[in-house]
Image (cartoon, rainbow, N blue to C red):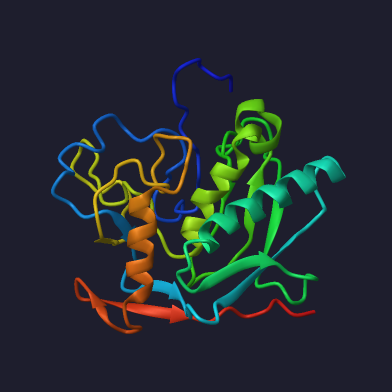
Length: 244
């Protein structure tokens, strides 16, 4: 991929791929008619997963960056630095969860890995993949994020979006409808908070955390565990170390 001067580039992410493919650019008009709809999107089917949080003693969510696969030590360090810089921006919100590097793999709650798809694979141009609190897996940084000069420059921004998934946020357009009337992403989700089609969880910008994201994430994490949002229970999860 090459940068088009003066134009924004979509951020391919397949964290919600099990719901519906979401890498690439959303269809034209996917933001139409949203002005009266609330902002961040949360929930996975019949629950709204979230981490146990504590503002005075933040829950530690630890990651470990695996060296295998990265083309060089420099690439691994670049990815690790970008992930921690993105994590710091979320940590600075002060919503009760602190994401930081683990001293070793056993004490980590999740891994950050590199992956290079084969040429012609469906996800060849994917940037990254993460997970939701109810289904912890690896964060995967795809080859394009490091080898395409444009996306390498904005790796930290890509990871801001992925960490949004890790703390429980869905894509901003998860409840938008396609031309045939079906949902863009079939797994049910709930809207919460204020409207901002340029949320960090959208695709149409280089991702940055917006003021509305900050306000809404704080408010979301202040809701009581097991309380209902549109009839769906908020369900808190406690991070578990990977172990030896």
